[in-house]
Image (cartoon, rainbow, N blue to C red; front, side, top):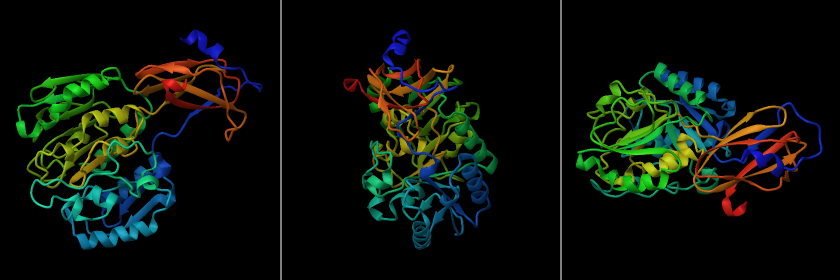
Length: 409
């Protein structure tokens, strides 16, 4: 394929650059879209929040400070005061929240991340034990700007077992940005019938995603000591092998159980254990959900959105239909499958991109980073999954890349 790419790309007038700049059309949230929320009365929150903002380059005006007594469950009245203060501070451009604390993980009958996303409303809680809850407008929605489209800002806790653990998680996410790590997805079908409800989707998940990533259904209680689990979904009250398992940087993993979102001192394994094992994000319910699979991540959606280049915040929020009782934890901006562009000589770049189906990569060229961008000849075909494409003969200084459906080639 590389042989005809140089012919397909038209040569534009202009001086050759040492390395042409290729930017992709916006497909995910970035540091400029997120507000970091710090609780001034929580030393963990101050240190982790300031560290995250600095390392991720979050603009200073989007580092927002509130003050409340940290505890497991935040009283509703206190939450209403804090959220009102936050809403008065947050710029309209912000699309999501990084809540820099571990405590609280609940607000009344809601999980704290859903409360800050939607506001406190009992429609997001079970009206009675084991009842359905309100559906999320973000479920399987690919909108890059959720506040502009739906009027909500999805939230994730920058939680950790310690300040040191949280900083390590942040560094892992930064290190793997756009690296397209090699690995597999593991779907573990366990003998725990009540917690194994997602297994009904596993065969369909394999069929839908096997062209994009190695994916395996494992029957039993775990995957053993494998070191390639970029995705790991199971259903158990605790996953014993996490004492020895080390997940690769950028991994997403969770266990379906009632109280994985009780982050400290619970009777079941905390979602924080996945982060300690190397994951970039996880999820757990903090209020009894019963066995409604709608209250937990749909593995196929988590994997599909993440591989396409979504952040951990976007991939996880898009996978839960009824998120009112669940806590999202991790690095919201972790994005290992962001499109990668690497210079290979004065007039060539290599592009690595993961696409869900047959598609095409189309380039536009310009003499200025603000355009106008002139379309270049034929588009480059892409196959489902990981694509590594060498683009040659790039004589303009600036290019803009867009992934389009194959029929648009």
